[in-house]
View (cartoon, rainbow, N blue to C red):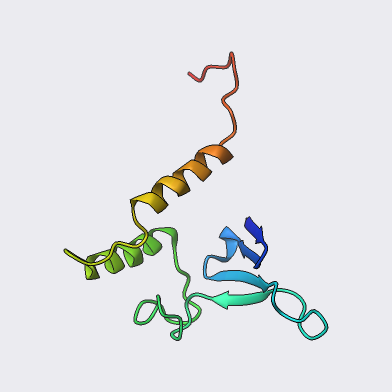
Length: 109
C-alpha cells in the first residue's frame, strides 16, 4: 500500500485493489464529511478508462502500461508530452530515496 498525505488531502493506493484509489480532501468541512472517498478507475465515466474495461473487470499491472502508451501515441509526433522529462527525473529521485540501502558484506550467489 502507498499512502501520500499532504496539505490538500490524502491519496492511498493498495495493490490488492488495483481498480481503486482512496482519497480524502482536506478542504471538506469536517462537521459534514469525514473519511475517505473511493475512486473506481474502471467506471466508464472516468476519463482515462472510456472504452477500456467494463465495471468489475480487474485492471492488471500490464494493462495500465497499455493505457499510458495509448495516451502517448495520441500526442505523436508534436503534442505536449505530459508528464515530461523533468517529472520523470523527479519521480526517479523519489524512488531512489525510498530504496533501502544495500546490506554491507552480504553477497548473493
